[in-house]
Image 1 (cartoon, rainbow, N blue to C red):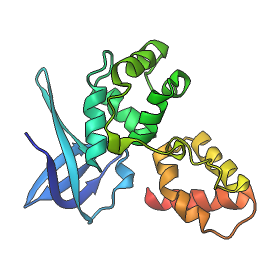
Image 2 (image 1 turned 60 degrees about the vertical axis):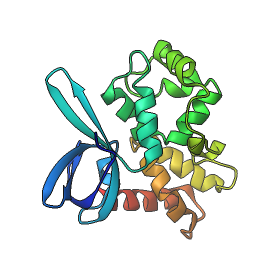
Image 3 (image 1 turned 45 degrees about the vertical axis):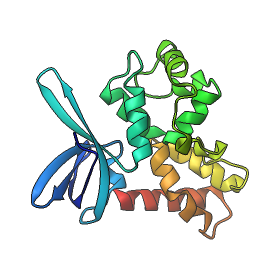
Image 4 (image 1 turned 90 degrees about the vertical axis):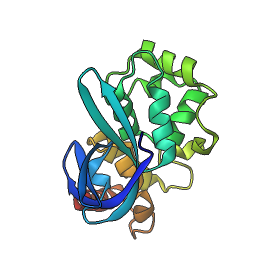
Length: 198
């Protein structure tokens, strides 16, 4: 029914955002609400999900994420909340890589995903993730070879502290330009950047 909304982000909560489109406020359930900025004009891809007597609009920053969300919904045992939880922790490209590599262990890191469901995801979606979602190996983790060891350790520590992979990915480029040589310095700057997004 809806492909995308273009409007202004009016409100951000821990579970959803509100986008104003020509004076109408739409509540969108999104993977990481604090990745959005209040007052910003943007296009958000949306998917309407109707279950029983409940209707919900899910929002995505890219068409690739929307496609991946819908592909996840075709997997037995994956509902909208589980699909959104997966996208909160990994990019579409990162998920494509994990599936291509039969990485059950990686997939079981997501909330509510056990070995059986992880295997089902691989079985159902291998080779089906859109070509534009195919990543380099760095899409799964920021600890690629071009990242300094101290920075890589700091990024891993931020994830261990409970920040989502996507949130950490979002500040990686900024940290690469930060003048530091120790893990502690990178970690402090990372925490500062992440707190500024909340």
